[in-house]
Image (tube, rainbow, N blue to C red):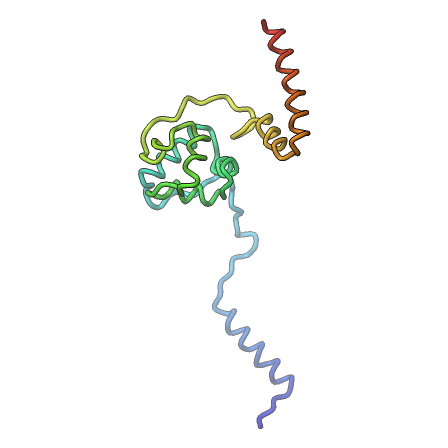
Amino acid sequence: MFLLDPLTCSSITSYFVNMQTEGVDEPAISEITPYALSMPRKLTKTRGKQGAFLASLRRDAGLTQTQLADAIGEKQQTIAYWERSARPARSDAIPKLARILGVSSEDLLQGKGQAPPKRLQRSGPSSKIQKLFEEVSQLPRRQQDKVIEFVAAFVEQHKRKAS
């Protein structure tokens, strides 16, 4: 049986570790530049017709990939993939995309049509009131009814003042 003392094992291990790291040129920490989120990567391949159409609709709507992804319940990486691809988005996402982008599902699938004119939006893909009502929709039914009653009174009051 062959036994090595601990010092020999330690020196052999450090020798192999040194051998592995000698050929590696790692940049110093100061040489690494952080990725700027506002600076998208350049495309290396041309976009497919379907993806180019989706990207143009998204830009015309004034949305980022992240905002669109949040609005339809997908990841930003999924939106980026669909915009690079020549294939359409998944069938379950088509109606959501069409609704958010303001086109029909058929136009979205065929890569035709135009985006509706830009509408003024105050806070991204959906307004504050839309986000609030989405949260209200998660409340129990009785509480939802109270909120609706309260908001309806304000709307009615505004209509009376406007006329």
